[in-house]
Image (cartoon, each protein chain N blue to C red):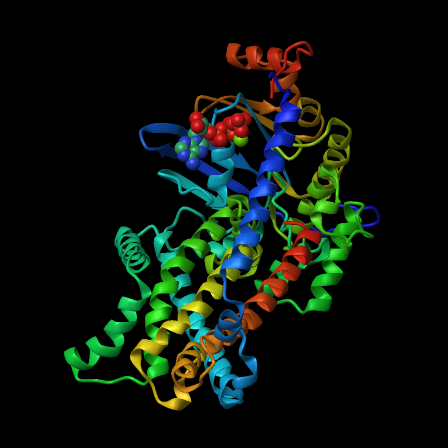
Length: 260
Length: 263
Ligand SMILES: Nc1ncnc2c1ncn2[C@@H]1O[C@H](COP(=O)(O)OP(=O)(O)OP(=O)(O)O)[C@@H](O)[C@H]1O
Ligand SMILES: [Mg+2]
């Protein structure tokens, strides 16, 4: 981890998901998922719409309550009913498709509110950390703006800086570029690539196959609530073995086919 | 006699103006203006109403409004949270409360506190407490619905983002959701305070000591004690506007500031 280009020092933790099940009513969305992410590893989740990628990600920080299986994050057993939820979430940064910045707070306040209120950091110290993270995402001069004064790409970069300001040991990304204009997708992906190189553990749901192939250590292909294929990124995307994976990739990579 | 739409529109406008002018002329001719002016505008005779109207009446109207609103706001917030709770009995209770107090006239609730309590429990509360409880209960029912709508208008992603930053549920509510809901509920809340201000006029039916009079009571006493038609009521009305119009203006200012920083 070089500190000259990446000021971030990452203390990364791993994720161990075993037999994860989740149902909405009678609709079983996750049918026993096993997935490990080693500390500092980048894993991308791909798969068709409705296959349960978001649900899986949201189970990891308990935005959704699993119905079965276990999830370990760092030292935390997330699925233990007695787990200190807020303590666990402080370690897990999440970036949403729709950014979800706090519109009534400035960019800087977005990044300092939780460190101050939750981690009980001093304001000056929280601002220092937040500014460093905003500089990291190329928005050091934007602290006084409000979110609606930024482009989509800039908002998503703030969202990443906000998550980093809690100094997480694991980052979850749920289709972070799907709501962006095509010309701003690159700026967000390059920040994520930076973060990966700095040693952050990352679990990323994405439809950006080029990114997955280049940045991810491993790729999981999900369909219908199960992991259909998993392996090294180059193998799963470059040379898929399962017919369902082949079919999915053909549709995603076919430029004449519109797929979201 | 085919007319174009344009001609027909102009014709109908002319007719409306004509009717309006005729009505005004009829009014001017039919009304006995000396009597009317005496009844409504005998301001010169109102000396005895002052300074009590302001020092006691205006003060009490504002005081009753503030305590009723404070009570209604706290209770209303509680009811709004109950109505959104996952525990069903909370929701049932809140719904029943809201439907009941929204559905009956405020004056009945006021009478229940003023005359029902002493009969049922042998206790007599001071006038301000009766007013605060009665109007507070009624306004809580309206405020609860307004707050619930406002809180639910804040996108779910805001709570999720706050929770995933490690905020406990109450902290996400206080720091992220309520400030955004506040901007949404400001206009309906202003309405609520204005309605409440006017509802404090119902206090007069409970009777009260002189020090507890609010503006309508002063107006009514003025009619019977001063030979000035209903001018005392006109003055009371004007003083209500002295409260409500600045309220509207302040709210509008807040709103435009909120609009500037958007959402
Ligand atoms: N809150 C919910 N209540 C009921 N059903 C839900 C809920 N959230 C998701 N689902 C269902 O669970 C299934 C998986 O949804 P999920 O959002 O995890 O899919 P996804 O793989 O992320 O798809 P996409 O690529 O469209 O984001 C879908 O069939 C969806 O309808
Ligand atoms: Mg999804």
